[in-house]
Length: 271
Image (cartoon, rainbow, N blue to C red; front, side, top):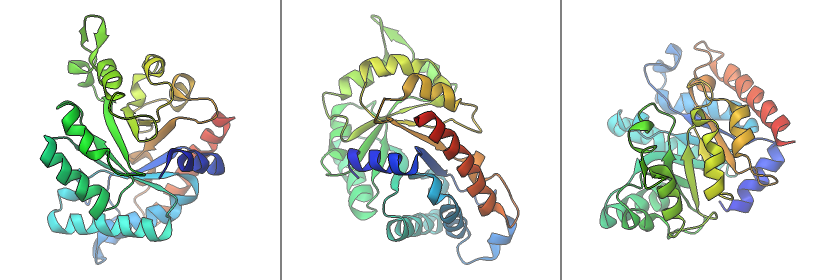
């Protein structure tokens, strides 16, 4: 998916919502446990209900890897289902990979060739040669961890060296490796006004923003400080607040309602 195609989807749907598929076998409705593949069945129904209101899906690999082979099969079935039925939705594999060159090449081959996702989250802290193997795929995106929403982000990301915070150094340095056509940054919604500082050094890059909803991030604040005029520049993820909004047989319907509520907020903010 190109940047222009992404912007087109945002404009057409009046949404920059990404639905996080953090599918936990211990949290899905009990009646699904009798199906052949409960994880995939949950995902399928969530996707069908929320697709009109979002522009991306973000399966978190940890929720699939923990299930061993069954989990990987559910993940691959989910990707195939999206590719077949909702080809205009961006698929972001939230895997946070990052290793030395040859290993990164294999990770890139796995996600961009074998699984054919559109984007992959990458941990940049091993430097350029750990990131560049992911950048050679046309139409694919690298999403670097920059400033995350968790409490521990203060331990390293906000530490300062000669007046430059570590997350700022990551953003500045990485722009030597790629541009805003194939690289984004993860910035947690709980970081608030920090988006203003990020926009000073990355004015045109898309930002993947987790932390809205269950983690307490403010959509209005994110947009106030992080949105780019005309291009939007944001993909805002919501996981638990949407997919686990209901635990009955109406779970998918309620998830769709929650996604629609967020989309309507976004439509107003895009104005």
